[in-house]
Length: 219
Ligand code: AP5
Figure 1 (cartoon, helix red, strand yellow):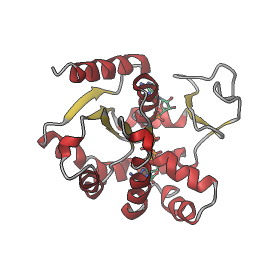
Figure 2 (tube, protein in one colour):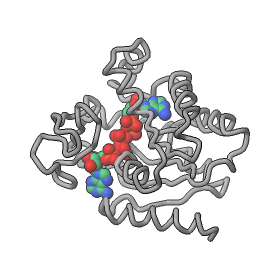
Figure 3 (cartoon, protein in one colour):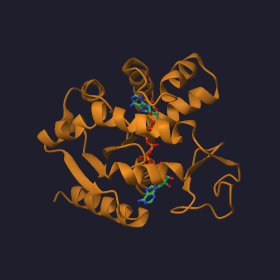
C-alpha cells in the first residue's frame, strides 16, 4: 500500500505514520527525519538543509527529491510505504507521480490530518524527541514512561530547534502558502481522505485503520 500523510506541522503525521508502519509492515519515509539525520552527521546536504529548517522554510525541492528518490528505490519499499511530510509543494507532488511511473493512480491513498493552528502551537511546545532514535513524545498527551528518557532506546529526550514558538509560526505560514494547495490538488483527483486531527492519538489511529481497511476490501 502506498500512502501519503498530509497535514500542517504538528498535525500528528509522524505519530500516525509510525503506528501505521508497525501495523502494515511497510516503511515510514519522513523527509524531516532524513534531513535531520544528515544534519546530525554534518553532511554537506545536512548543513544546507539546516539553514532552511532553522528559519521555518522548506528545503529546496532538488534536495528533498533526491533523498526521496534514493529511499523509494530501496528494497523495503517494494510492498509499499507511508510518506510523512512529502510531498510539500506542487512540484514535489508532480515529481512523485513521475517517479511512480507517470500516473497518480499508483498511489493508493492520500490522507489529510486536519487541525487548527492554535492546537498545533500547544502540541509542538510540548513535543520531545529521542536524541538517538527520533521517537516522538508529548509531555502531556503522550509522555514517556520515565521522564526525559526514550521508552524504546533509553536515550535522552530533547526539544527540536524548530519547535521554538517563533519558528513554529513561520513553519505554519510556509505550510499555508506552499503545502496547503496540495489538499485541493489531491481532492480534484478524488484521492483525498480527510481525518479529524483534534481527536486523541488512539481515535485517529482507529479512523486511519478503518479507512485503510475499507480500501483494502475495495469499498
Ligand atoms: P518535518 O519533520 O516533516 O516537520 P513537520 O511537517 O513540520 O511536522 P512535524 O514533525 O513537526 O509534525 P507531525 O505532523 O509529524 O506531528 P507529530 O506526530 O510529531 O519537517 C521539518 C522541516 O524539514 C520542515 O520545516 C522543512 O524545513 C524540512 N522539510 C521536511 N520535509 C520537506 C519537504 N518535503 N520539502 C521541503 N522541506 C522539507 O506530533 C506533534 C506533537 O503532538 C507530538 O508531541 C505528539 O506526541 C503530539 N500528538 C500527535 N498526535 C496527537 C493527538 N492526536 N493528540 C495530542 N497530541 C498529539
